[in-house]
Image 1 (cartoon, one colour):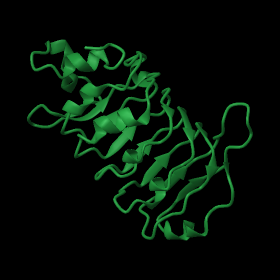
Image 2 (tube, rainbow, N blue to C red; image 1 turned 180 degrees about the vertical axis):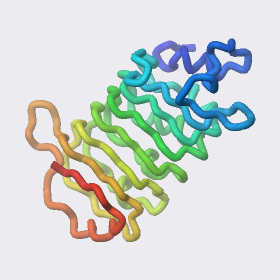
Image 3 (cartoon, rainbow, N blue to C red; image 1 turned 120 degrees about the vertical axis):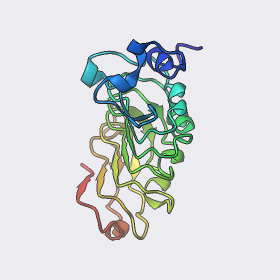
Amino acid sequence: DNPAAICTGLQRAVDPNRATEDDLCSQAPNICDMDGRLMKLVLSGSDFGNLVCKSGFPQSAANLTRLQILDLSKNRITDDTASVVAVISKLNTLEKLFLHGNALDGPLDCGLFTHATLQVLWLSENLLKGSIPACATQSTQSKLEQISLKGNQLAGPIPDFRQGSPLIMFDISDNGPKGNSKGINGTLPYSIQNAKLLEFLDIS
């Protein structure tokens, strides 16, 4: 296995012949179902004070097909969002994805916003660049209620919001290329009225 593309701790955990000490079901706050399949996985650097992923988004996570909650925040993961999508596209029950405080780079992949079951997406405090794609707020496939893109290097206009948007929270604050004051710009689109459930909006 390529250590730059996989987290060794997670790799051991998904091994059918794993040792008892590598069983993530026995480590709070993780939660498993009656069959011993992970439903909630928290390997946040902030919770355990460890560096889970030195580089590369862990492709082993694609084997955790019962996952509903995945938290790999604050682990300095360096990769692009296409690699994230390659994993979550295989997780058909995933509802919450927390990847804030990493080093994810490049543009936003639309697969993040069109996942069939994902409701919460936190990508704040990464190194994401480019504009916010229209699919982030316009996809009719999206079930997303929370989107946090705060503290990246995104720039450009705020896309329109689709009719019947499920969004409750939308945070795109503190964005812009380093050394450049031009981040998210333009006016708030009139279509924001389509997000009738919206309770929290930050575009500062």
